[in-house]
Image 1 (cartoon, rainbow, N blue to C red):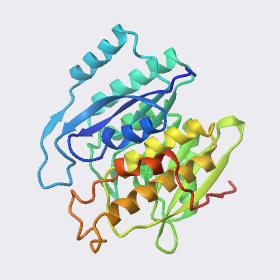
Image 2: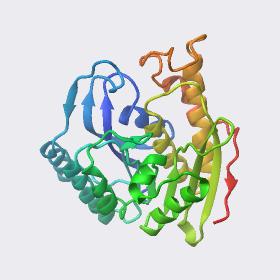
Image 3: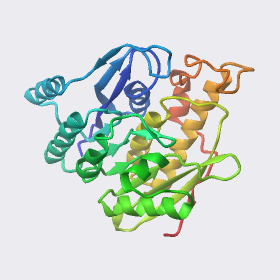
Image 4: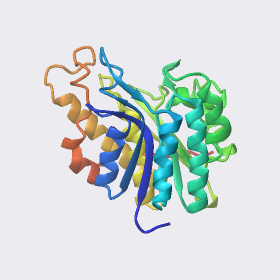
Length: 301
């Protein structure tokens, strides 16, 4: 790999708030990564507000940006991170770009957050799904779907741990070396369940982690998760147990700080969209030095 860690991050952008590239860039920079961002959309704020305005990048816009980088010899990346993209045509272009970047740097690590939906509901067009399955998965080194997105990618309904592990097996079989279920509703006692599995190094390591549920719903958490996982997987030399522990440790600190910013308003019903914006800047020390309070447990596969 190149000595300098350079990430090309392709996902959404908001002027105000923290989702997409706004949620991913700062943590990566704090942890020592150079970040070049391409915004698939540029909105005033995330869509959970009552009103949002902005633009969606066109395929021509994307081609022009890549051409400018190419002509100046700036396509030498060590990592690619992709997130929200609602255009199947643009997603296909992104797949072709990633292949080109891997030809330039065979050690490039591609982390895919397949942002398609949650809780049984897709919020991107259905036509995006086959592009993820047929064009993106064969290129992805790491994939970080939530439970619903893992079901979409594998056509497997996950209603227990065994079926969740089956989705992970299926994604490994498609060539993805590291599979991370960032969150699932299969935890016990008011916990979400996360599972990370890697086949890097010739043997398989699979761990689970129990994630305490908070009484609020936040936006940008998946984007933050993917960026943290990319960073710590690199900085721990691909130690999946340490990576998931540090990622969740940071996430919990950020979310707890966000919740505690408004005493007496501890539920999502009481917090406004503005109040639920992640307190990322205030969490700089936690991003640099995460407190690991929850240990990941090995799973025998």
